[in-house]
Length: 300
Image 1 (cartoon, helix red, strand yellow):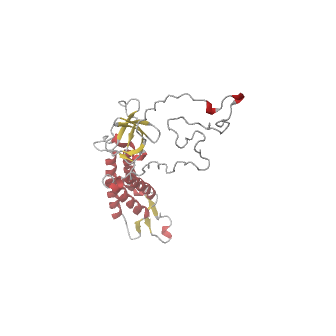
Image 2 (cartoon, rainbow, N blue to C red):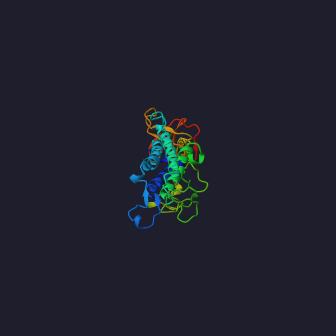
Image 3 (tube, rainbow, N blue to C red):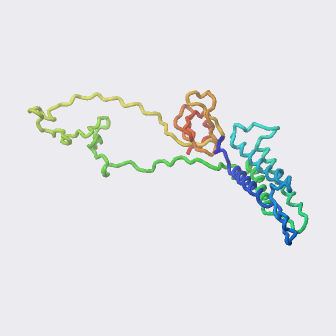
């Protein structure tokens, strides 16, 4: 189940189904009656009343079932794109049910009254409006770009905007202290880490050593062989990216194994490693896998 695969059109379908369910409990018929003979007459009935059968299953329950089929198809994601029931996908069946429920609601609103004192109640009109939204979102969802847009999109993390400490700031190491390089010092020379002449117990130049031993200026340090610089790390920095179409994610330690996840459009993913033309991507739950097809990706 992939909740991030829902679109704005799916949200409209779900909202219309909730309104349709609420409308089924509101009065479908209202009767204006006055006098003593109206005492035993029910002046309003909702769609759940047996006297209005088959209003409930042919309008309200059919519309709710249509929304359920459409949302179930979306939750399954692209893996169920080719699954069909009697030649149609679940979302196609849902669209057909929504249009049928709307058509039945129109005919139900056009007749059935037995006199001027009987009229359709708020439940009938709210159900009709809900079915218009439901059928419209179901039919136009795959076609209108505004309805095809993802309902929730991930944003890449904001890069660090702060600066680095500069010498002289309070609490920061100063040149010549705690290994901070002295101005003009050879960058290949190891820092002194606080062992500066005259500082922190280090004998000053010219001062005699213990027991008359020569001071620091009399000791000639042995030359130190230059150490080879370490090889530079791979020039790669993690970045956020999005895919233009659904793509599978292979296991990190077995790129030819069974897929372990799926990347969907409208969601940002973090690339943590590059292997040739492939990327090692990280899902929202921390799972990492290899994305072999990197064509057309959008960097964040």
